[in-house]
Length: 327
Image (cartoon, rainbow, N blue to C red; front, side, top):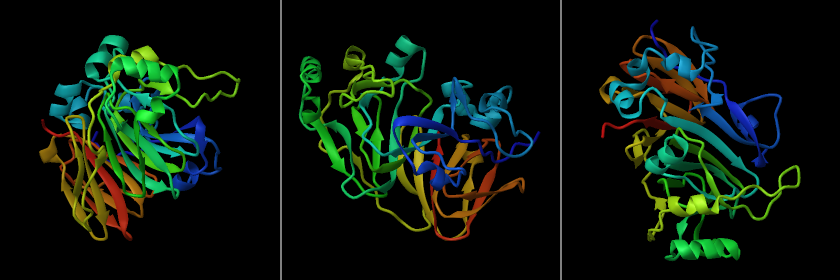
């Protein structure tokens, strides 16, 4: 079977802090409220994405990859990460503050959970006035001080808070303490992992009246206590030119703000490519003349076996372009 650009059914996840914007953003009816996340492309056990278009419609991402790993993933990606699709793509809508949390790196996650670690990045799609997030520390602390501050409810005092706006980017390597604040709508790119250590949750209670579990001791060994001057990712936006936002061994992400035709040589990357549309609409055509339309709120997976693609926006469009670098 010739492979082609793939769309997937979104996996909508109600959350205690979820908002009301994901369905309208994605054009889903009837609209559901309290949806905190839409998992766009997922190979997480128990939450596998299902193909929504073409001959492979109805198959899970894992089934599509099976027996044709290099064709989907790319040879170097398969060699590096195995047959598990290595990235999880999400939209996040926070009507309330998310918990303060941290994720383990590959070594610790493998040891404790037989999982990938969780390095991730955020792109702010929308932000209410005054909305903010936490990334990293505002002052140097030790593991011992971390525990005492969690116990006496002063841990928030040593976190770095950023007031943010549309277009802001944050790279969050495993080990960095972080949290999304209320009023933010974010695109998240991360390793395929659902391992989260919750450090502080504002003493909230769930629908049954119980406080959510904290992972104070597990987090202590996962935290990177290194203090940095600035945790924000800086870039210069350009029209009709791919702008690099993040490059790490887990993913390379470009911002595409395009008003005219855009082409990409996929074969030379030896990696799948993902396009996440955050604004506008258009048509994507691959080198085998397969075509697929896209609109705001949709994500498309381009298998590594496809030689190249051409994107023709109908109007000004904004997309994230994601792949695995050769390093």
